Image (cartoon, rainbow, N blue to C red; front, side, top):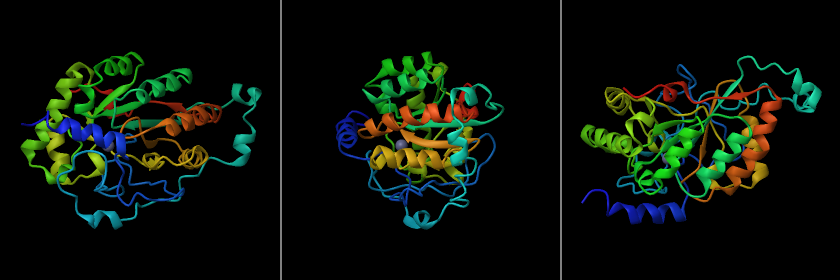
Length: 291
Ligand SMILES: [Zn+2]
């Protein structure tokens, strides 16, 4: 009885709780995390955000807490490039002359698709001409298939966030393959990018290799804004400001809980980022088709 019995649990969890919180994740505002960046703005190093065992989806076994203590390297350096003077210069005249060369932010949204937040986020992105990546949970896709079309129509990329949102290091290779394959079948292979994000950031060399054999690059993040804890909007905005740097890969959530504050913070930050010269792109690995 694989999937069906899990759905009520999934829904309950979605209603009640936080999302794919990286471990150690009750971090305060300074919680911008910067694991080692590998390649195209994605990360695959087994450092930084590790899983939080208590979270929203059925998680049969809590992952080892060993990673929870590992402080992400480079944390604290994320505010570079965002100064009061930079913000002060954001007049219409300054906007017209802003340097738009090469400053890109990768916004990523996990745990959906879900009503109404995925749609609301799509609207904010469209209003700001921003492209992003949605790491979808297969069991959620089956409940909201229309949102997959809307994500693709918006020009965004889709990544695989597994079927049950279970910590991958607790699973066999066969289970990992099944989680990935089922999710891609629900999304439609033509819609799925060549990337996956392990729930809770829980990964090791085996999960990365198994995912790669299935065609997916493991993509984590360089920054988070702790939006799964639903902080007040000003706090969330402050976290996003601190993440304002070229090639930041920012973990946010459309699913896994109530996300009005995430939507509100994006409404504030996307215009600010644009005035600072940032553009917004899909994570490159996710923009590539799954082969
Ligand atoms: Zn997640």
